[in-house]
Image (cartoon, rainbow, N blue to C red; front, side, top):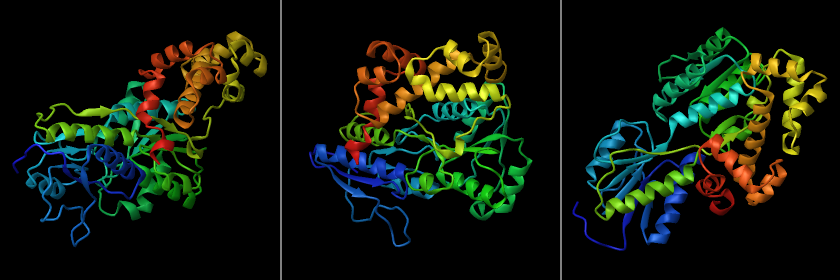
Length: 387
């Protein structure tokens, strides 16, 4: 399709809106389009209910989640610039791609589980057409990078949703307590249901974290499901920006644009301390309750009636970190949560979390997470503004 300079681009958005991820992407693309004067076609379908652009549409570009071959072929035939926001299909040279950084997602999940004392890991990512195999591969690699092993669930895609007996048998063979990474909220919800049917305690026996967040599925499950919160608004905005350049004649970027997740949405499904040492459990609970008060290792030792040397040794043996490192990690996780959930200034957050100044919290935050706190907040696009 020949393209000419225009200020009224017609853009198709072929992204499902059944989950939080899809709705956030559609919303952010539409907001970007409103600022640019685009006319958008949102999630059009054919008579079979499949996402498809109608034959009468005369558009200039498409943002799509290319999750299967038929969708990919349909979009390619449109002969317009395309930006894919999924990683399910193999990357091809005729479209650009913006997606979540799967490696960062995996590291975040492993760290979250390990911080709760979990030393056995498993991965439940049935092939359901919503994510690529790379998601599972990265999680296993992240576990192995810590010296651990990851048990993978092997199953055919067909019938995964009703394969309760197969999932039950797999779960009962796992060493417990175990931390399981589920591909997204749908298999995570299934795991919670199978555990409830078979008297497997979540999170005490099995801690579950989903690779994506969903406002409905993660919150209505019992227990509620911890998840990786993706920067889906930022993905949509970035994809729209890339598409705008392509429609103006720019070359298709060769590299995939990777967007790191925002952080962990900690809920009940990982609210556990899988540690046999009761004194160490007391120390960890004390740190979680008082980390924002500027405590140090001596305070933890006094609260647990342990010598500082004994405390250090127990942390190193069981958690492979020092008490001081755990205090800093807990404080910085609180900083990240306040950045994402409030509009408080960096200075106010520093005061609330026991840091001496905004500069000191910014320096510590960037050292741990690799980006300044202000950048994380901007990438989050603040839920209050976007909803």
